Length: 113
Image (cartoon, rainbow, N blue to C red; front, side):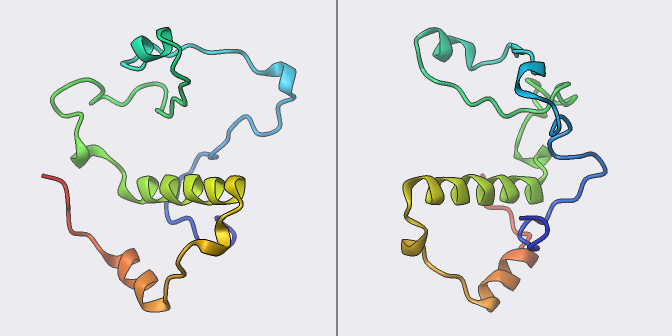
């Protein structure tokens, strides 16, 4: 997606730093967070949070102001593309015009309260 110009965030570190590991080289890490009670009740968890935790983690500053908006939009694109492919519904998704894409890329207004 980055090569296609769809991903807008930039980072000096690789997105998947362990990309070339064999499947048996991964260890099951456990991250304690507010998802644990759900997991204990059998809810499947997809935990996406940076580790080590950012300095704002679980403090009053842990809010929308501290999100990296280009990264949030990238995750939205990645999950949407995966879901559309998985469900085989890509052809039903609306197509964006060039103007919509430009406007979206330059939009900086905050929409949260």
